[in-house]
Amino acid sequence: RDALLLSERGILYAPDFVINSGGIINAAMEYLACSRGGLYSPEAVEEKISEIFSNLRFLFDRAQASGLDTHAVALEMARERLRQP
View 1 (tube, rainbow, N blue to C red):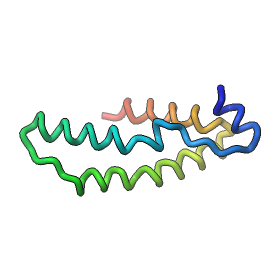
View 2 (cartoon, one colour; view 1 turned 30 degrees about the horizontal axis):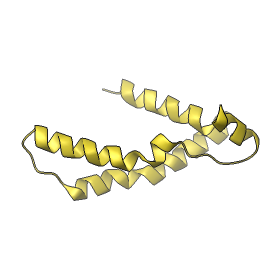
View 3 (tube, helix red, strand yellow; view 1 turned 60 degrees about the horizontal axis):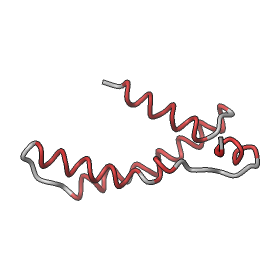
C-alpha cells in the first residue's frame, strides 16, 4: 500500500527485497558451495550482485510502462522468476 502512495506522489520507491538482495545472494551461494562440497567464489557472488542495478532499472522501466507501482512490479518479476525452470 505504501508503494502505491509513494508512486501517486511521484516518489520512486525501490522495494527492499530488491535492493537488499545482495545479502541473500551471498548467503545462498555460500550455502550451495558448502552443501555441494565446492568452493565459495567471491567473484561469482560479485557477478550476481552486479546484476542488481540492471534489475532495478528494468523494474523501474516496467513499472512506468505498466502504470503499476514498483512493489507490485517487483512481486510480478519474482513470481515470473520462480516459475522459470
